[in-house]
Image 1 (cartoon, rainbow, N blue to C red):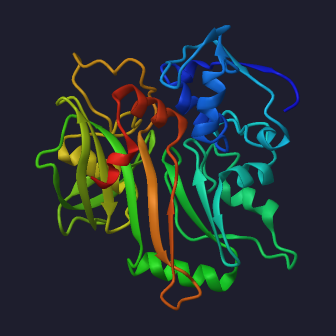
Image 2 (image 1 turned 180 degrees about the vertical axis):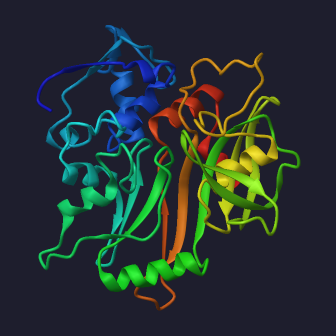
Length: 330
């Protein structure tokens, strides 16, 4: 970056703290460096000085000073279904990638991107992986799925042998998966176990899953664990969910079964007619595959343990509600 840039704040960035805006757009810019640029007035908003906790608003212009060739590589537009639209498949995969070795890729899938093809789906991860065929002509293989509207950790095998090993780990439940969700209301108790039977049904709006009885045709047992990390009065709760089984829409249906549907869920979010969607929160599914711990295909007691940063719409909501990601381990 050899010249001053002026970058406009987008509508879906309303209310973000300036330091979190920089974390989204310039993930390589350290906190200390950012503070130095702010103190010296080199970073400005609409011509005025700003602080790290300044809230940005749509249409404002952020002045970005020259920061050298290394910083030019720092700028990465947050990956969303919109920002990836004109990007080559290989470039999107590169931006999604958070871990790789000789056997495995781990991606942070954005919300809105399908994992596999289906009705009305023109672009999906499985097709995009064609861009990363090896020199031997081997295409990376999917070993599990995420719903289209769910963001976060997606593990992909680079070889046939790795795919067999990873698929076995998912099937035999040797894998720990942790999801973050924002739900309506606060679950009581704050920590618990959800055990139901689920059945998938065809509806005019596509597949839908409901709680069923043991013995119902097509019903499968589903087990999830949850705990409340933080809450906004009795209105909303940030919860961690851990699926022990891997049924279609399991966490989304289990949250509804608790009486605490996930905000922005187009299939399962239910509310009364007097309830208003919170201002400043985007009406998108607030469910994110945050962390995975899975045995490495090479064995030997080695594990892959990866964490995926939140998608932009959930960063915006966490910022609005004052949630601190460090609370995860409290």
